[in-house]
Image (cartoon, rainbow, N blue to C red; front, side, top):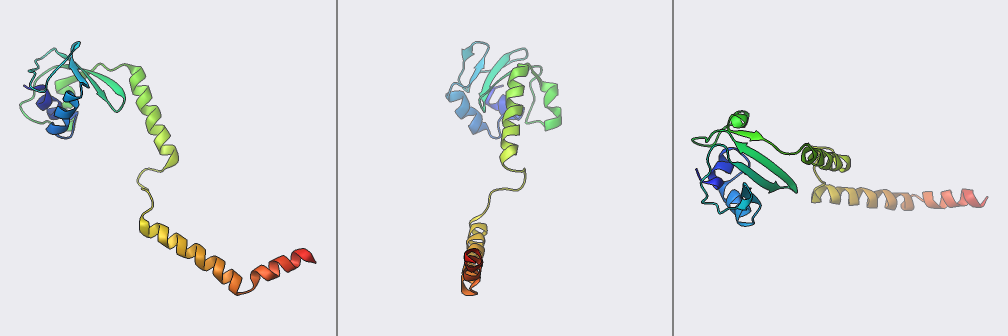
Length: 141
């Protein structure tokens, strides 16, 4: 089986074209040699993949006939990635969660406009009611 198709079948990449592009960028190698996307892989090959600044190493246990479900992936590959690489990945995920809670998403343009309207209406209503004059007059006395 071609290496680009294999990486797609074991769900390492979302599409086959993404797998092909990554191979062209020399981010995938079999053994020690970088390969082309047409390279045929066989059982027992070690594949080194650079993805998301992590160096993955996988061993092919079996060649799938077509794309497999996520639960069946361990039947076809064995992860031989260093534990340090997995720790780096965990640290990156924790750093991302620190700034934004998962599922919250970033504010939309509508959210920003509503916030601007709220701030403007709050400050103008306080000025119109003369609350600022009262506030500063208490300080002087």
